[in-house]
Length: 166
Image 1: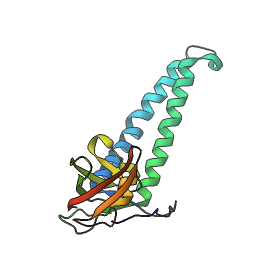
Image 2: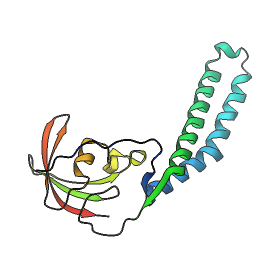
Image 3: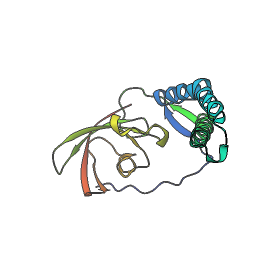
Image 4: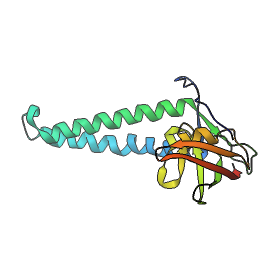
């Protein structure tokens, strides 16, 4: 059995992204700057026409949206400034960020495929899990045939790695 430990977080370290994740963030950033900023500015302008700003729910909501949009822009710019794109080039013998891993749950014999990504790319609906999640941490560095024990909210599961692709 392989047990994986925690990794040290460093706010200034590079952020590993798949090409797909990098391009999605670029697209989102462009939309926020070109479209969302204008939409929010227009909502603020319209809300000001209602008068007293201190009790104007539309104005307060528009300002909150503006803060969210500007915060998201800063977050994405920070991620992109630190980003390093991972090359995904076929099969690999060890799980790393960017790997697509087919695993067998030894408790219920179900097979699942996860794409191991960094936290900015996580999308549970697409089985994109973070390298910092319990399953992601346990899989990093493991190889085909390895059996991994992972503590999850429902208890402990054993996972066997069937395939690794990049």
